[in-house]
Length: 194
Image (cartoon, rainbow, N blue to C red; front, side, top):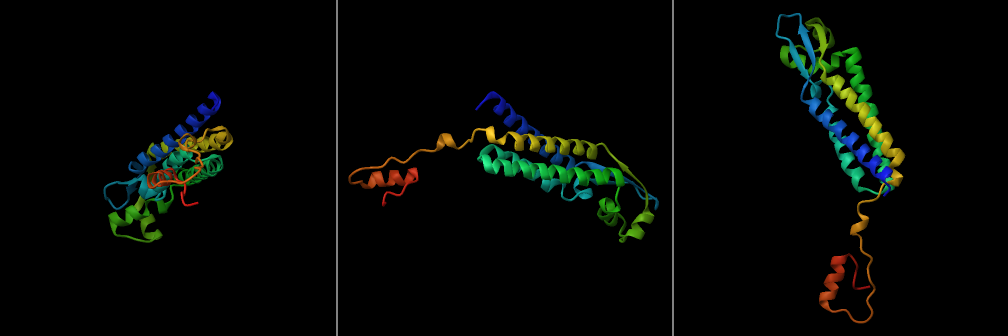
């Protein structure tokens, strides 16, 4: 494999790995702070509560990184495109939380804390919704994931496949085969009865 292809492979895998790790880490951290009008303590909403798909799609990015390192050129492009799609989706969802502070991002945590349900009741309890640094960090992670996916899609054809060095070509045998040789043939993956 050429040095340029090796660098492209390691760079894209590293970008996808870092993005997935940032997503997992940010899912456990506080994304939103809710100031309440009812005199209750401010409510901290974690990333996985504000965006329920955060942890699963971050794990998906990590799994795609592992798969990209192992599969052949066709599936590599498919998995790279999936990483790109996950990054784009998470960019949109995280951007929505950052820019709009939607009620649905805090509603489950607020309902659990107050016992109230419904948009009207919950809106009346919210004085303000503040954003911490974690969703911004996650947003940067999704940009990194998109970049890693694009780099992998573009350069995947030049990567060396990892499984080739472990493949062995079966050697045809002339004449009778004893029991031990039959087991050895089975171990190598060929059918000695043919």
